[in-house]
Image (cartoon, rainbow over all chains, first blue to last red; front, side):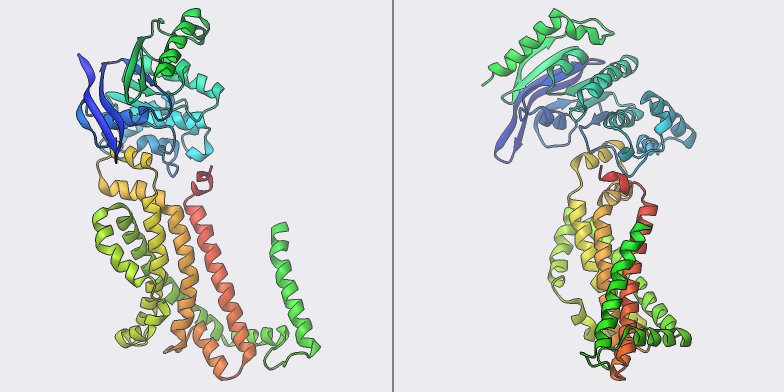
Length: 235
Length: 251
C-alpha cells in the first residue's frame, strides 16, 4: 500500500514546463531521496507534493505533511522552543509543554531552548526546523535540501542524527538533495530527476542502522558511480 | 566613553566655531547671536517654564499623530501587501494621495477640524501614514515564501499568521517606516503649529520670529532638533529592547 502516490504530475511556470508527466510512489515509513542537477525540478516536485504550487495530475498524500526547507523557515523572531510550540494551540498547555520538551530533547537543544535562531549554528537551526515539523506529528516529511547550507562536517553529523530520528519515528520521508553520497547514505531508494521526469530508480542495499563506514565500501562507490552516470547521461 | 566622546566632540567643535565667528564681528550679532546669548534665551525659557509646556504640547501632538498614523499604516500595509483584494481596493487610492505634500492639506484640515489639537494630530497622522504604509506594504510583499508556507502547514488561523508571522517578518521594514514617520512627524508638528496654535515649539519659533528674538528662535530650534533626535533614538532603543531577536536576525 503506497503512502504517497503521484500520477502524471505536471507543473508549468508561465510558459516553462518544470515537471512533465511525473509518476512517483512511496511506501509508509520509506525514506526516498531525490537527486538531480540544479534546476532539474527537485524542489518543484516537493512543492507540488506539499500543495504549495498549482499542478496538474493526481497527487495522493496524507493530510498531515511536514516540510523542512533549506533556509528561511525557522522563524527568527521566536526562540527554539517557541518555534516548536508554533501551531500547537489545539493542545492544552500541559500537553503543549510535553510536546515541546520531547522535541527539544530530540533536537538535542534542551539547553538552547530560549535562544533565537540567530544565536544558533546552522545545524542547530535545522534541528529546530525538523523538531518543529515533527511536533505536529506529520505522516509524511518532505525535506528540501535541508543541509545544503551546512559545512561538510556538520552535514555528516546531521545525516547521522536524522537517521537516528527516523529510526525511532519511522515517518515516510521524501528527501531532496544534490549530494549523491547524502542520498545514498540516508535513503532506501534514490530517484534521479532529470529533464523534468524521473529517469532512474536505484534501491540502496545497505543494512540499517547505517554508520559512516558504509561510505567507504566498494559497493557504496559503485552505486555512486551508477547514479552519477545516469545524471550525466541525461541530455 | 569613546562613543560619548565621538558624540560630544563635533558638538563642542560646532559651538566653538559659532562663538569664534560671532565674536569676530563679521556678522551682525542681532541676526547671528552668540552661543552665550542663545543659551541665556534658553535658560530664561527654562526658568519661566514655557519651554516645558511647549515641549509637552508638541510631543503630545507628535505621539498622538505618530501612533494613529503608524497604526493605520501598519494595518493597511500588511493587508495591501499580502491580500490581493485589499491591494486592488486601497493601493490606487493611497498611491494617488501619496505624492501630495502633507503640509498642503493643513489649510483644508483647519477648515474641517478648526485649530484644535484634533486638526494638528490629523495632519501629523496623515503625513506619518504614507512612509509607514509603503514600508509595511513592500515588506509584507517580500516575506520569504518558506515563512508563509511553514505558517500554512503549522496553523490554520489567519489571525495567528498575521500576528505571529507576517507582522514580525515585516517588522524591520515597519521600523524604517516609523523612523521616517518620526522625522516627517516633527516637520508636521512644526508646520501645523505655525498657524492657529497657542503653544508648542512651532508656535514658539513663530512668535519669537515675529518678536525678532533670533536668540530665542535658535534656542527653540535647537530644542526641536534635539527632541527629534531623542525621540528617534528612544524609538530605536525600545524596539531593540522589545524585539531582542532583531539584533540576531541579520545573521
